[in-house]
Amino acid sequence: MRVRVLAALAIATLAWIPLSVQPVSAIYCYSGDPPAVYQACLSYNGGIGQQVNNQNQLSNIQSHINNVTLQINAIDTLINNLKNQIAAQQALIAQTQTAIDDLNRQIRFGEADLTRLVANTSVRDELLNQRLRYIDSHGALNYVQLVLTASNFNQMMDRMVAAQQVAASDRKLLDDLALQHSQVAIANSALDAQKSQVTALLEQQKATEADMQSNLKAQAAALVYEQQLEVQLSAQYAAVQAERAAIDAQVAQLAVQYQVAAAKAGGGSGVFAWPEPACGPNCISQRFGCSSFYLEVPDPNCPWPHKIHTGLDIAGPYGSNIIAADTGVVYLYPGSIGYGNLVVMIHGNGYSTYYGHTAGYAPGLSSGQVVARGTTIAFEGSTGWSTGPHLHFEVRINGVYKDPCIWLGC
Image (cartoon, rainbow, N blue to C red; front, side, top):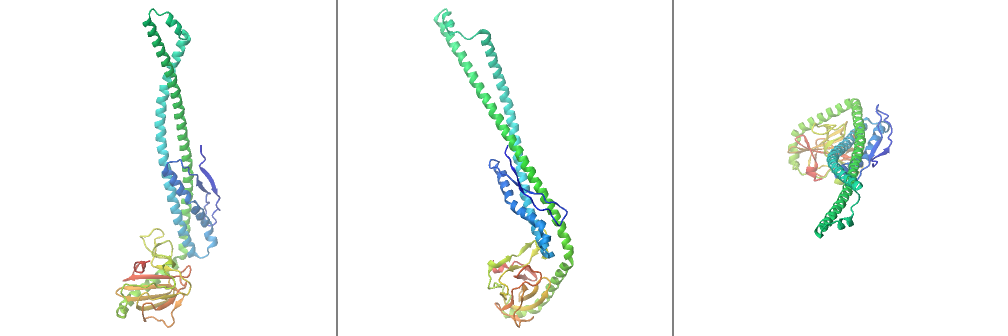
């Protein structure tokens, strides 16, 4: 029987939660398996490297990351990786079970065919035994005596033909029995191979289920730990969301005040320039959409942790010029908790843009100014809750954030 389950890597025990991580097992994928099982097995093994990485992260997040926000972000990424790993394991288990069921069905049919074949062979064996016993008790056929004792030529020919038929029948009986015994041996061998394959698949399934249970436990523990971290950050997170709501409410009021002036100056056309000329679409580090980062805006339509990234992150060189994407009126929010040094521009016709995490503002820029499209308004930085230098750029229509790439074509 093939050895299908190989010992893999021994993973360090978790230091930060009361859970021991089981060693990762790589499953031996046999190309002779049913194609669906073989492909599912390859897919599973393809994720083993990521699984090892996940478990290393699981034991190292607390000891190597001191920032609680970054810990939560790392845990979210880990949880998503585990979800993908568990999905691959579930797919492999389902495919393996289907193959086991199919093989068991084939074995049942094969055993039924073998039973009939053995029964038929037993009957023929008994016929042969009877024939041998007859020959043993009456002696072998004497062709000379048949000829000499014949009363006439016709009787002699009849006896000769009959003797030849008996001999032919004996030869056929022997040949048939040899073939049937060979078929019985082949059938037994095929059944043994199928039964061995079922045993191997059951071992594979057992190993996969063990790995999956380990992942499920790790995922549950990660969720518990993340909730503990969220409690630590809950006050800061509430402050960020309150600040964001206050800025949005103020911008809504300012829009009423400034949109006439902005539209009069040529803004609000719905056509936007790329906000960081020194670094184009290839510098996008995070797009608009569902996010695993704890500090993002809540969105129940997104998967766990139900957060959404409301803009576009452009990671160019620190200090790069940031320009007004369209003509409008600027409003400055220096030192905000989440956005850091923020610029909001009101363009008219319901359009506004946000520029977050800037290192600072363009010299002489002040709130209430009308700024032309393409004018430098700030410089790329990493202020506020930021993991590195980048520009967080948002496009909003009547206060509702939209994907900037709709207008920028990225």
